[in-house]
Length: 454
Image 1 (cartoon, helix red, strand yellow):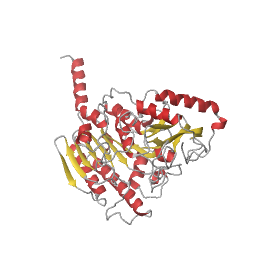
Image 2 (cartoon, helix red, strand yellow):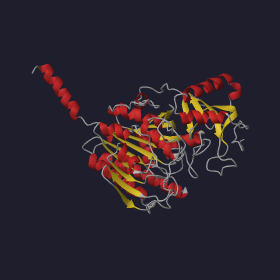
Image 3 (cartoon, rainbow, N blue to C red):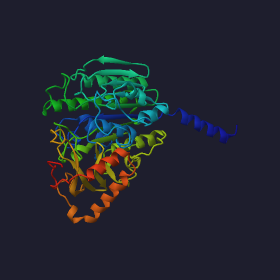
Image 4 (cartoon, rainbow, N blue to C red):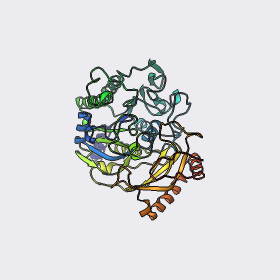
């Protein structure tokens, strides 16, 4: 063997033995943009605040949907929820889940030899064929849907069987159980690359906190729950540090949508269930020492859709064959670029694309005839076109208070045209929903939720 061939073969062997990076994805439920200390909140979150100092904090991170199931579907697939068969919240009576043929982050990394585990709230179908082991996860521990849905059964599942751990999960000890399972997963897989997906049940209601945290926050039970969530993040980081895995592990923390009845949208307009920024913009922090620029705050507007292509870029996993709606964030995370160019972004609620964003401009095109979670008026909940689409500059007006459409008719026209063009690539249900919306009487008042529909 020549010296050249020897060095080449040695290099190949070294590359084969070098450990692949691990990935930990922590997904809170209904955590508001303004709930964490590092985002200006008043709840004590020292571990997440430290994570922000050691990594990159994103101030313009959007969920792909303002409610639970669709946001999770997009996070794991990198595709809009209306493309992957989950346009709305799933309930225990539903018999559907992610559409056949889709690929999740778990699927991609499992195919690359990663150990994959899911701990927490799944909410992408509760029947066996829709649970995590059918979507790229070796093991699962958690509640298959929201904790306000009956019964909130706590399951353990793998590719061979599914067993009930608690027929009705104890909300007061749930975060402790999730955390213990997550730490055990890390400990058990430390010698090989792993992907841990940890979609928390909280702070979705009904709330529950352990004795160690109950009554300790200045912000009531909600604050107790968020402080325990922060503790859980700290325990995960502790497990990584004990096992010398900190520099080998990408950790992403974010939320599925804005806050519900409790929690702070951080001064943004709206809450969970609506396509104002308060329902869609969420706290997000990314950390990987030596890879992700430390102590940085990014104003790049990004989305949970971007997680899959970003993880694939880091790990070398093959991208799915189906087109992605997210982009690779590594140029921003590494500090090489402050901004990324990207296509316009659609804000979906159900099958309805109600808003479109391009750069700093966001155009509201349609809106429901009733506020989220309020009783539906006679005739039911209906999506209506706005008589005058509302344009907001999110750079100068992040809380969407000042409609500048009258001063920018050309921009309105451009975004309306772009909206039509983008919808042409979506499933028929999306096109049909838009056709039905356009055929209805327009909503009248600018900036207000319309009261009636004909």
